[in-house]
Length: 414
Ligand SMILES: Cc1cc2nc3c(=O)[nH]c(=O)nc-3n(C[C@H](O)[C@H](O)[C@H](O)COP(=O)(O)OP(=O)(O)OC[C@H]3O[C@@H](n4cnc5c(N)ncnc54)[C@H](O)[C@@H]3O)c2cc1C
Image (cartoon, rainbow, N blue to C red; front, side):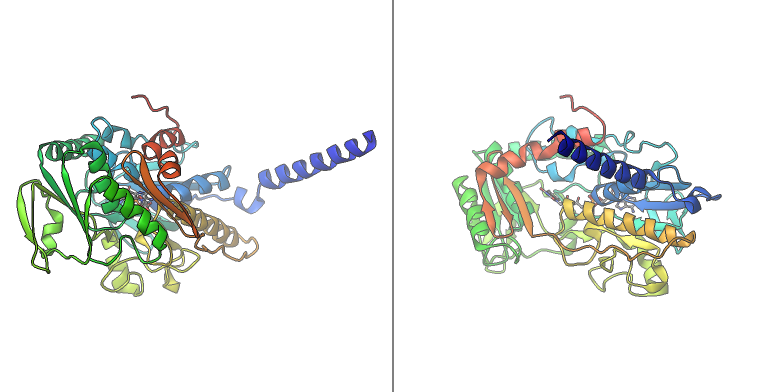
């Protein structure tokens, strides 16, 4: 018996030792790098963080430098945006400092706006340039109001959220346009925190939510909204101009729909029409072609997360800004970031004379959708399984804000 235990212990020890050595073994060709290899990441949010975290650990001890660029001063936790529009004091918790993100101080996060991407350099709004050997674009989407993707720092973001709270407080009735996850979440937040307001949600289709969601999930969402006395109107389209999407709608206004019904409310929120932040790639698109989708402007990527154009295989794009075959959710953005980093590391190895390795590819995970409806409701669908209020509200408590503070090396203090 004791011989068996000793043999197992030795086996486990050897396996662990082998794993440790192979994980920590340094690659001589990379150790010999004179000039640094520069990896630039545009967007320090979910996709950018997934990429940077993995790349930092893979590049430990090598002359490889990561620069993340983001126009926002701090990480903005988009997922909690709607709670910030109903609960006073919540919006400030959505802005989290990123200064503890990198462990090695040779890597940096630049607070700047990218105005153009060239083949081997990024041009900033200030006219400075940042050269790169490899680039990852993870610049996400811009939303019409009320989702606030315009504020660049905590002060501005909190002010926008507070104005919305005041507007809702003073309103008698609220119109929400768009019955996707965003519209449903916002309706739920307002209905739970301001039960005296009349909330109307109008949706242009026959059923709530995007096409790939099960009917059970849609039914649960509708039930949960109706339980909160939200009026849901289907097959209804408002008549509006494109520039209307850019306005904040904080005054009483009457909107007519294509069916002829008039919706007169104190405040209106448009929860659709997000656009990719990809305009800085237009010059590259003109020069090389196939960088951006026609009309919709999403970045065209292969499953390796490299741009489609073969002359730009050192440029990657991940997350919401990409065209593609997967949900626009934070987990997918993060995972795609890690795929891009793995592949950059493989390309660097090849560049210094190492073996040519097959690049990793992103495979869409099992379909998962999860959205809260107020503080106690929500629906989660994972594959064919659908969970309702109890599990979803536990899982999505406080929009996961305390967890994110921890991720960035901070304790959330109220
Ligand atoms: C209200 C709401 C609720 C959501 N809830 C969930 C949820 O519960 N679960 C979930 O998984 N997903 C949720 N999502 C989706 C999720 O937030 C996105 O999928 C995720 O943020 C995508 O990450 P990303 O890194 O691709 O882009 P983003 O998070 O949008 O980040 C892009 C970053 O790029 C920066 N940037 C953009 N342009 C420039 C430029 N020119 N120069 C410099 N920096 C630039 C921006 O400042 C930003 O920090 C929600 C979205 C919304 C709007």
